[in-house]
Length: 485
Figure 1 (cartoon, rainbow, N blue to C red):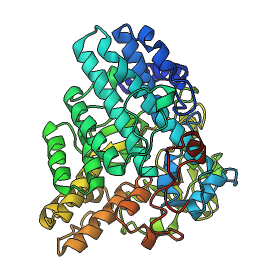
Figure 2 (figure 1 turned 90 degrees about the vertical axis):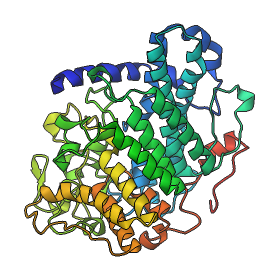
Figure 3 (figure 1 turned 180 degrees about the vertical axis):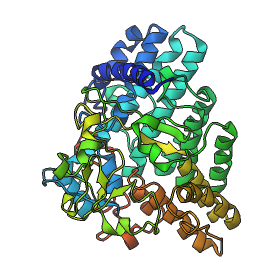
Figure 4 (figure 1 turned 120 degrees about the vertical axis):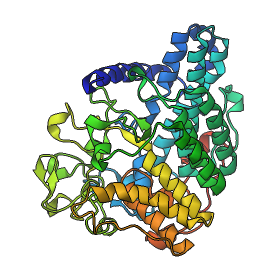
């Protein structure tokens, strides 16, 4: 099917989700509003179409748009070592993130908490009520699988940001909402169990009308990532083997295609969050937030020189990740004056002529792609002491980049395994350059236990977790604050 046909279908899917945001927002503030869903869900959930529309609404919290104020990107990128906050100073929270001076009252944390729980609440609404509907069984199973996966994805991000979080698995009445936080291990175990169930319910792939919905591979991948955070290396390797056995994923030949509007939802895409330029706030706002102020963007992310220096000589991924002086920049030529560091991110950005408004870019966010799955495997193999096998997996990722370099014979050479620590450092380096500005870096540094060695101002024992928003602490007296805040 041609790209324009797919876009038309996807636009219809996203419009349905957007129009349902009012329904979703009726239960958005899980701790301070009447759970209307309990009162009217029985009358709303009558048909399979009702269930489909309800699960569509559960996707709205995924988007990086201005309505959502989704600053997950800032936690991952600015708090890490990839970028510093630029812009005009109008977002003090971003400055606080980079300086580790944030507090429980920093606005971005409360916005993110509410956004994720809005998505979780919508998933629970579906799961609580779909069982009573007489509908096509295959569609019912798919919708249940989607809701379980989406809820798991929201909880995974909450766990990354805040550590322990309240685990709501059903719609609760007001007098039962004040519950304490569950441990990170409990959250991860819930994710693993739900993704295992979802993987049995979701299809191997979707037709063009349903591109953007999770698949069996998506659920297995999120399960593998949860095992990665548990440091359950054997399960990571085992689950990645299951993903490979599906036979539907392979790396695309050209790394640059991963961030091109014309090559989205490709064979490397395991879980891709869809954005569309419709002037309806369903587009990717990173297009505006990351674009240089010299190019009519906000310039709120400026690439660190130290990050740029991580790329090996001749690595073609550098120019596809970060723009530097005198390089092409979406119809312009990048100048040192375009940022205070002389470098700026280019992923998720697009030329002005391709969007109707800069805040609504239509480049998707590849939350999980197959190259990352391979790097999980390589990391787990290293920790299991299987360094030869790890080197072979790592080579698959490096070879793709090498083959598109100017001098393949001398660029990104094969890394021969010498020791476990040498291979550990090699895999970590590859994650940094392969997945640059894809919202992983800070969380990687934390889970490796080396953030204090890399990030100025990071306090070990405190900054691994961000503070629970003060608003939520006030609303739910069963919550306790993270150490140090």
